[in-house]
Image (cartoon, rainbow, N blue to C red; front, side, top):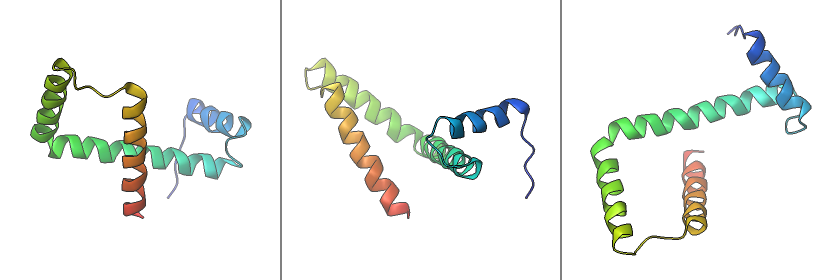
Length: 91
């Protein structure tokens, strides 16, 4: 497969490598594709389970109105753990 990048896209990949976060352009590009896959997974999930997602949001809002909300940092940590578990299961 041949991929044609715009100059802006090439600059972004080069910037990623120059930042020191990636060893080479291939590694940066692979990570970009991983981000895309994760975004697509979320989009597909949202479309497929739209009603269930809306119900969960509604339930969470109602819980927060009753003072049952979870601290933001705690919630983020819970999401990180859930995401890591989900990622491990896909491998």
